[in-house]
Length: 98
Image (cartoon, rainbow, N blue to C red; front, side, top):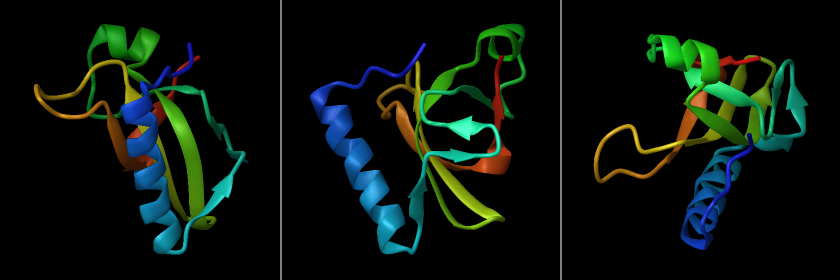
């Protein structure tokens, strides 16, 4: 499953990505097992469904160097009520599912 973004979410993803670019990050098609569209879970999400199915998809992969990797991730649903589904996470906060 890949993240399907609404037009407003697409604009937000572009804004988040622009912020990363402003801080010196560049886009990568792949970094190790991290690719746009990959199914992931936040490592703090430790319940059976998260381990089995994941909780979101990578929208974009960026890095400043081999050890400084940031991802734009779209969760299936907001982590907290009233918040966006989109977030920026460091690569060590996510685990690829599948």
